[in-house]
Amino acid sequence: MTEPQVALVHGFGTSFEATWVGNGWAALLEDAGRTVIGVDLLGHGTAEKPADPDAYRNLEQRVLDVLPAEPVDGIGFSMGAQVLLWLAAHHPDRFGRLVVSGIGRNLFEPDVEWRPKMVEAVRTGVAATPELRYFAQLPESPDADRTALVAFLERPDRREFPPELLASVTLPVLVVIGGADLAGPADPLVDALPDASLVVLPGVDHFATPKNFSFIEAALDFIDAQPF
Image (cartoon, rainbow, N blue to C red; front, side, top):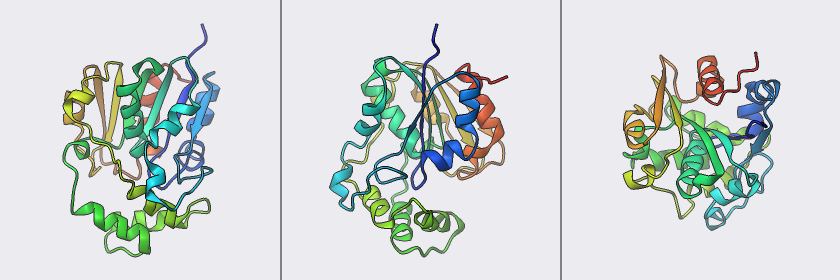
């Protein structure tokens, strides 16, 4: 039997190439005999980069459009994890297993003070804290566009994840969170999902998560894609 393809969805301000190719994920999955579906979210990487926030409505559809008709396994980080959760809730027949990372408490308790500061940091390239400086510098990547990333953040239909929506994600889900990730803890998310397990990466912050070997190992184990 052919193993499911694996869709890899990156976080805000990065790309398939930076997150999944650069950190070795794509090669490991291919070594395990899995076909990788690399997705660049609208406004990122090789995708179009509209300057109008309204162009980013229903951005999850772009991901759904590149998936095959048969179910895939999905691995997402941060914004990419949110996209996969949203799609799995609305199109459960398109997925087998999900690995979501870099999300947790933040889905239920969004920081209304933090977000405007993040938008301003991305817009200006100026920030006062290490966390904000990370986001301020993202548009300096070769394939990034500052105006498009601001428009992405200001899209008019940012998703919410009420308990009843998450309760509809009945497929197996692995939630991975860094112990030092400000998006955590992830226990509220795990509790809201019907079939979820949790891996905590001790001492790992949000930005170091995609390259953490323990994350890679746990994710590949979960979808039965160990290369060796």
